[in-house]
Image (tube, rainbow, N blue to C red; front, side, top):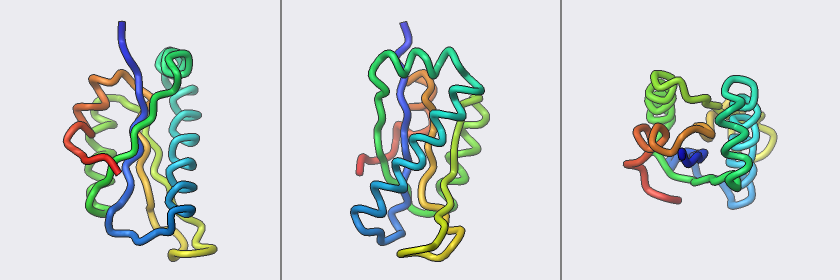
Length: 118
């Protein structure tokens, strides 16, 4: 039996308030989940019924997010990059987080297993 999870990777180099950070993570989680529901409905359903496990980790910068996204896509894992509208703390179009999955834990860990928890 697979276990499923979603990992949201946040940039360490952005200095966001706690509230802004939480909202960006939430945007990533929802966007990636909806994408997975369309692209990998069996993964989404299993993850949803297992309790929707989510983990938030940190990466160095925007470049790191793109590298992780490419690795996830090679494994056919749904991803979502979140770009901020720029209405509050950061410039418009700033990429804040990358959400990966939901997908089987083993696959997600190949991409994000080395990253530290927030």
